Each structure stands twice: as structure tokens, then as C-alpha cells.
Image 1 (cartoon, rainbow, N blue to C red):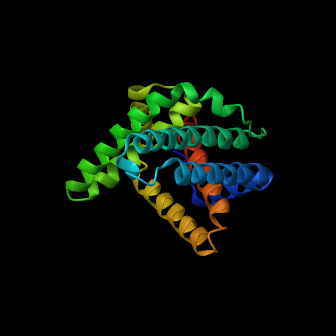
Image 2 (tube, rainbow, N blue to C red; image 1 turned 60 degrees about the horizontal axis):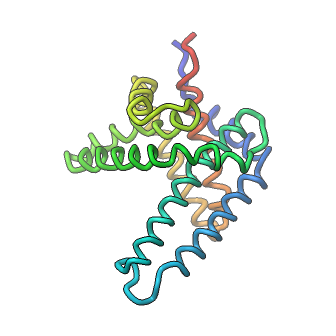
Length: 207
């Protein structure tokens, strides 16, 4: 059986796609960062902070905005991988998935935390096996349960290679952060595209 996860292929494909739509992908990320930062800074009241009524409301709004961007940006990256131009309308298209995504992410976080508590390794294993629930929701329009089942199915037998990919992504993120933080606007799109490439490779029919 042909190996689906080839590190050089993943990086080259993601980098090629990033170069094709760099200004759009970086611009969307920069725009979101500015909007989110302003909302976070000015929506949280000085008195009471996060624990006031308005602070709680502002925090919820920030959470919803962050989740919406994550879904829409991943959709943009899949469009880029398909050779299309990322569309701002994607954020409206994925907005209906927002409640399900938040619930699914909470389940994902709880499962990983429980796994981490159980001697760390189970948590990492579960994280690797279930990580593509988001990609499945966005790219395959699956629901909460189906997205987890789909991720578990496609990652079977690939845990070690997915672990290496995760380490590569972490290294890229760290390098991006070190490069005067500006490198993050290259690192984050590249990592997201790599995530999309791996998902697409795993979902390819077996030859």
C-alpha cells in the first residue's frame, strides 16, 4: 500500500499553495488579528473585567468570532488547495456549522484532557486520531459524531507519521514566532494548509 503521508510532499504542496494566494491568506489573518484584538481590548470593561455581565458577553462574542474565523479560514485553505481563490463568503457559509463546531471542540478538548491525565501518551494519541474532525466538518459537511468517526477512520495506522507532522508544524510555528512575530503570518497559513493537505491525502482512495 502506497504511503499517504510523505513529509516532503506535504510541505511542498502547502508551500506552493501558500505562494499562490499568500497576500489573501495573510491579509485575512492580519485583518482578523486586528479586529479580534480591538474587540478584546475595548469590549472588556475596566470595572469587573471578565467577571462582569458585559465582560462575559464580550468574552462569548470573542469566542464565537474566533471559532467562526477558524472554520472560515480552513475553508479558504481548502479552496486554495483546490486552485481557487479564497472567498470571504466562506465565513457566511460555515456560520451554520458554528454551534456544532463549538460542541465538537469542547468534546475534543475534554477527551484530550482526560487522556493527558492518564499518563500523557493516551492524550497525544487521541489528539492525533481525532484532530481531523474539523476538516471533515468543513470539507465533507459532516456532523459532530460523523466527523469524529471519520477522523478516527482515516488516521488508522498513521499515528506515528501524524506525530512527526505535528512536530514539524510546531517547529514552523516556533520559527514564525521567533522571526519578530511577523513570521506568524506565514507560519499559520502554511500550517493550516499542511493540515488540509494531510487530510486530503488521508481521504484519497487507497490504490
